[in-house]
Length: 201
Length: 201
Image (tube, rainbow over all chains, first blue to last red; front, side, top):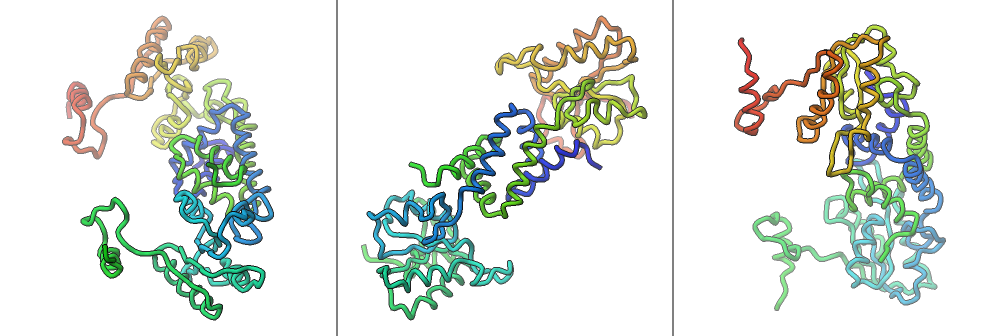
């Protein structure tokens, strides 16, 4: 049984399609939109349309951008010998926030996941190989920064195998205890990795 | 420092304006939109615009509807002698879900709240008085179902005073322990009210 007028039901359904938004939250958000001035709601709708129309992936690094080549790839001050390979655009932001990394990126837009029917050809691996193999570029290191979960690991392994023939340095982020973490709350696998990776002080 | 292209930043900001959506969630939702096919995203935008354009408040009960008079008010099978006064459209749904109430509703669209600068004229109290006073109608009972918090209580008291001259029955929902609740987790005020309102079995 439908309790709301059809346009309201449809708006609730649209909100409920978003990740992490359940039926109750979708209802709350839809009513929030309905309680707003018309211009506000239309501004929101316009932002969605605009973002979809003006944002595409950078020809080089595949990150989302509103330019043909994204600001990072076209920034001549960045170190063009390093490429950090990440799962998605949010990860680029995470690295940029550190203000420590000055190389380039490559966004895969996913990881290999047989369960979700995502194969190597469904993510931007081919584009990475083309960049590394490009004679006009001087890539010397690829840092694979996929997530430390099963799929991220498998994807990292797969990519590292493909990169071997190029004879460049291929690295993976270090595993260990997070800064500020409490040992008692850290899982055994992480602790084992932190132990294995211990260094002289 | 902005890490995303301006249209993406704007979309994130728009999501972050929604109630209960923080910066991180807004970012996640915006990227979800960007990863969807264009038609999906445009469908979402259209649902927002459509809902704002086609939904207004029912002339009678003030509930949100896409018709001049909402399906509940125009349903001749409903008991027109009872009006249940609620804070907002979601509360109508809560009552409809019980399938027990067969009277009409009146949606206030808020409660009196001096702290939030909401006075009696800012909510739909006047419209309620007009309905109760209408000689063509035969309202015999007004059930005030505002929330059991300070503002809901104050609003209920205020409305009940205004309704007194009409000589009709004015009731308030019963207070008590929620069905399935555990006594040990119930606050003292509720328990006191439940005790006061006890009935013979």
